[in-house]
Amino acid sequence: MSGPKIPLKIRLFLAVHSLSVNAVSSSDSNSVNRSLLKIFDPKASPAPSTKPDNGVVSSDVMVDPTRKLWFRLFTNTNNTAATAADVSLPVILFFHGGGFAYMAANSVHHDALCKRFAREIPALVVSVNYRLSPEHKYPAQYDDGFDVLEFIDSPKFEGFPANTKMQHIFVAGDSAGGNLAHHVALKACRHEFSRLKLCGVIELQPFYGGEERTESEIRLAGGPVLTTKRTDWMWKAFLPEGATRDHEAVNIFGPNSNSNVEKISESAFPATLVFIGGFDPLQDWQRRYVEGLKKCGKEVYKIEYPNAIHGFYAFEEFPESSLLIAEINSFIHNHLNL
Ligand SMILES: *[C@@H]1O[C@H](CO)[C@@H](O)[C@H](O)[C@H]1NC(C)=O
Ligand SMILES: *[C@@H]1O[C@H](CO)[C@@H](O)[C@H](O)[C@H]1NC(C)=O
Image (cartoon, rainbow, N blue to C red):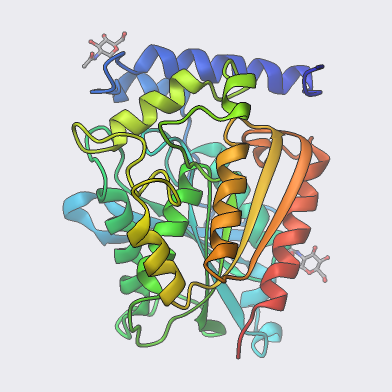
């Protein structure tokens, strides 16, 4: 079988990326050399209102300084203008990917992706900077994600433009951020908020797994982008000591998942949109996740891009990245429950 078509520039970027990830990660999953990683993970400053980036303004909001929990808020200047005062915007709460161990809300590629969302989707984007493993293991990331929801739900929080439709929240994320979106949404739909209403979940190539080796994990064990060796490392760095990949955080509908099935079936888990790429080793787990949600009686949409590699959405050169934005746009439009 032939490999995916990847432009040379992106190939080089991905090669450097995986070399750097290997260089900073200890083989026992116990540490990441953060000071060395800084060199390979350039950060973007917020775009102030005096200097919008192609129509998008961003700012950082501190949630809890004791654990350095903050988010970057992206707004389209067109939507905050007085002329748009009658347009109410939903909120996309976004979790960046990076195997729970790498990247940040201000990493250049995730900053650019969120700007693109804010530019092309009529929504406010909140990108969460959660704590990373292995320094902070499960469930620190899920706690951080949920705590940001509670923070923006509080009537005391006034950091959004006046035309924000606070009750309309979509929880989203890519890769490990997609896993986070699922777990945060599951907790959120079993919780009473004062203003928020969870309207949907959007998962870009979400990171799920299990002890079993699926066909796609075997076929694409060596990449591109993600290797099975690296995903095993990420789970070990994330999970409590001694847990297996059949942990309910990882294998959502696996052998230890009775409580997941029960919780999901009984809750008002919202409509879910899942993107799957044909060159992603994780694709079989993602399809099982979609089937599992269906079995629980939930509304779920699966979008398959046969030529897509893991992380394709970070590169505008891939035509699927524009298709993805259009799909998210119509999903949000169709799920703005009044
Ligand atoms: C991180 O990597 C740098 C550069 O290789 C090295 O000097 C430093 O000692 C490493 N830090 C740790 C904690 O291993
Ligand atoms: C703002 O609105 C103008 C006029 O409709 C449009 O041309 C431009 O692309 C918009 N900019 C953004 C960032 O959405």
